[in-house]
Image 1 (cartoon, helix red, strand yellow):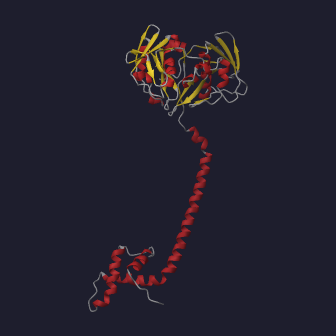
Image 2 (cartoon, rainbow, N blue to C red):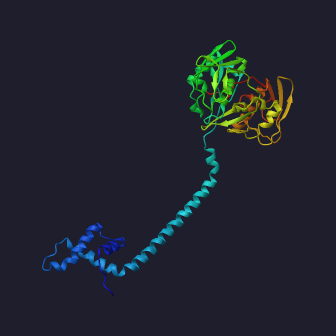
Length: 387
């Protein structure tokens, strides 16, 4: 067999393939010790220091390793591959077991999700019992695509004063909403007119299409005010980029179907289709037509609260009273928040079309939330109350 010709590269290469039991010294130290042993012939007659004995043993091991290394390395790689494959099989078994456990427990995981924080409306009689008043202020969703009306319990005061107070006190980010454009305005009143004085350029392009709905939903409650006058830095008329100069708007919220909006937080709101800034002329003219829309998905994150293809029976008794009959296919639960939201959405839709009382039939429940379903429900006040 041709003798191995050692050089730095061969020594370093063989050192890399040493068996697991090896000298604890560094490769550089081993190399120096081996080199010193190779040069031993040049130092005959000199006594080897005691520290060179381990180095000599290592050099011998290297020579033997040079002969048997190919087989050792080959067998070592095979053994290592076998261990890796065995570990992979074990990991795969654990993964499969974990997946099975995950599938079995998926329902439990879903139940562990945070519960929805729903902000329901109040009944007027309950507000009177608490000796409380209320106010509604329009805010924007996090994408500035919707007006989200938020109501607050207040003490008795002028309506504009209550609006100004809540604009300063409420943090919309707490419920996943963004600030109201009204925070930029100076808001005063003169008899039946609300005066909204805005700095020039304070309303951006995303807010412009929603501003009229936001102002109307804020100040039209209970018909306290008839119109809003817009001013810009004290002068009559605000100059919009899209619409030019606008001096005033009538304060009248049109009848519209209501839907669910889920904020990025766990908060859920009921929102009128009017909150999208849609032209009021395209709204359903009749209450029954509005109900027919309430099982359809809408744009801008508005979700239906009625099951798909639901047909509600509608019987208009007079201009103030209406009866709603549920189909047999709907099974309401007194403990289901979505069922309560469905009832509220119908009540708020009916209220927007001028009905003062609603009687529900075929609910198969005695009550849900604050409502006795065996009686007419009247006096639904505000929307999305925040405590």
